Length: 328
Image (cartoon, rainbow, N blue to C red):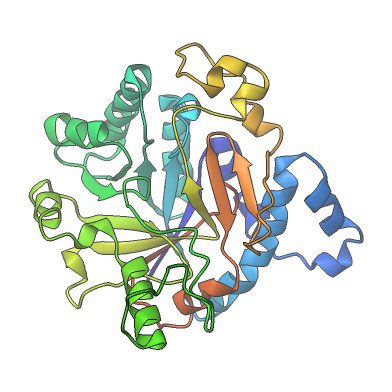
């Protein structure tokens, strides 16, 4: 298995040593309470990172190490890094001996597509056969037409999964009416979970197109129910992000709407004030024990105990993408 590490901007990447430093929260009185109640989003990131490292350290202790840098912005077109920042990240990763993967965004308007083109042009100068994660079909078209030597990987924004699944625990009641269904309860439950485990790439009318377009891999989110993967693995490399998954995202941004109300309702080409770098807007869902974090236009979830099968060998995949910080 390959270990990758993901940073959304160069400022975060420059803190890589701190991000990989394990800390005992018991040695920092009051740290956890501060992280849960203050507005600074970095505190939530840091607590999540400390918790996630407890899962990562056994892998590192077995001799696995990071060999690839994921860099770029998946969720917000206004946070797309500049070409100069991409170049800095590329050389930083190479100095650490890591391969480089550039992550491009989803739901991109024309200005963001042009910014992405500038970054891909710069990347082609640095490494003509680099790996690029696409989260927008327009970016894939750009890759095939103008940068055919890059290696395309389909990102998780385009991967349709049932992410907020509340009904997979043993003994949980089925969220459907059983009227008229003559089937054993456990069998019905198994079939429902199997449906939750399905993903769009398994569609036989869809998968051949990905292969024809040269897609080499697909990245996904961890989910409580896992993923139903065939024996041939769809002939695609499979990667999972940890510990931050996303539940939903969009072009318009409720967080930006706190400083410019029109941004809640329409896409605007003018620069954004980036309030997502200052605070979270976190909803509390009583029926879901895992905390959710609203950052920018995206709702994130911290993968908790249900991540165990992804670490103990029950699920087969080729790449684990570790995110020390929420990727915004």
